[in-house]
Amino acid sequence: MLSNSKPLVISFSGIDGAGKSTQIDRLHARLSQAGASVTRLTFWDDVAFLSRFRAAVSQRFLGGEQGIGVPGKPVARNDKNDRRWYLTLARSPLYLFDVLSLRRVVARAHAAKPDVIVFDRYIYDQLAHVPDCWIGRWYVRWLLWLAPRPDIAYLLDVCPEAALERKPEYPLNFLHRYRNSYFELRSMAPELVVISSLDVDSVERTIWEEFQGRFLAQRQILRGRAVSRAQRSIA
Image (cartoon, rainbow, N blue to C red; front, side, top):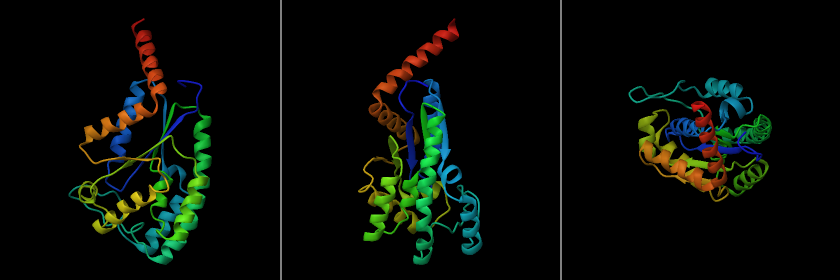
C-alpha cells in the first residue's frame, strides 16, 4: 500500500453509453503506471443483492432482448426502463439490501488494503430509479446515510442521443428521464462530481485532474512510488 491511510474509494456513475468502462480502464492504467494497487468492482456483479435472480425474474416477466448493444447492432432491453408503479414498488426494498451488501463489500475491499478501490456504478445508479416524491426522497436520504460514501464519485454526463448511438439498448425518452434523475439526486448527494461530455481524451484528463486536485498527498506518494520502481529497474 502506498501509505498508512485507508484506500481511496472511487465510483463512476451515469446513464448507459456515458463511457464509464472506457474511463475506468484509463484511470486504472494511470494509477497502475503510478505504482498504485487497484481493486475494481462492478456494482451489479459484485454488490447487488440477488443480482442473477433479479435479472432472471426481469427477463421472464418483462421480456426484452439480452446482450450489449453496439452501433449497428441494437439490443431492445426491457428492464429498468419499465417504471410502472408496481414494479417500482417491488424494486425499492431491494435497494436497502443493495446498501447493506455494499457496506460488506467495501469493508472486505478495505481489508485487502489496495491503494484505490474503483466501482463501476454505485448505489447512486440504483437510487436514480426511486420516484421523485416526498417518500421517495426520504427513502433516498436514508439509504445515502446508510451507504459508505466514496472519496470521489464521478458522474459522467452525456447527451442521451450520443449515449444511444454508442450503446443502443434503451429508448431515448428513458435515457432523458434517467439523466434527469441523476441531477435530481445531486441535491441529496452533493459529492457527485459531474464530468461533462467531451471527447474521450478530454474526459480522461478532466477525471485525472479532479483526482489529483482532491488527493494531492496521494499524488505525491504515487510519484515517489513510480520513481522508486524506476530506480529499482535500472539497478
